[in-house]
Length: 210
Image (cartoon, rainbow, N blue to C red; front, side):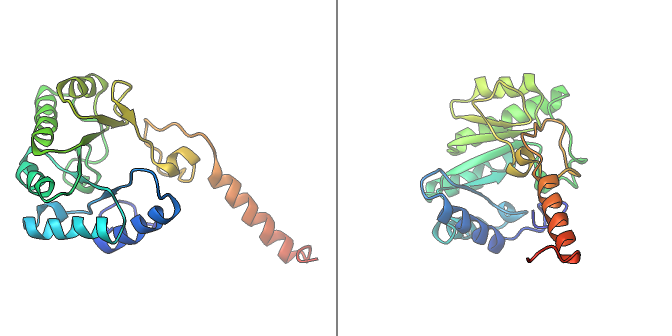
């Protein structure tokens, strides 16, 4: 949406700005803001400061953090400070350069075991929910059954407690970026482009304005 090919360029300032815009237009829904790239690996006090900004300035009720069991201590620290945290396991878009690209996770026994431990660690840390992205359906079902908190899936099959699709995917805004699990319910990219082309043509042909 911002013209970047990944989420790595997004900063805390950008997330605060966008979160606040969503809050103003949707004051009642649960609003969870993403903690940007590498922020979760700073000193705990700095992570808390970033999360606090997303809540105080952005208006979020909770913060989503990508990670694994190594972040259990940090997540617990944030929860103890009063920050509601949603964990994020499986494909971690902020680590796409170190994870070997966009792919399914949980295909090997090692990955399965790691994912189950990651989910368990996030529950122990006090996360109120977990997002599982691009996880093999069978493993996603195991995660759902192994934790007591909600497991929300994106590209992880039907056995999760809830489902997420990115709005630009649902609406058909990005034909060049189309994950295999996405179902598109509209084709607004073509609709919008056709409208602008028609407008441009009518201006050039002196049809509009009349």
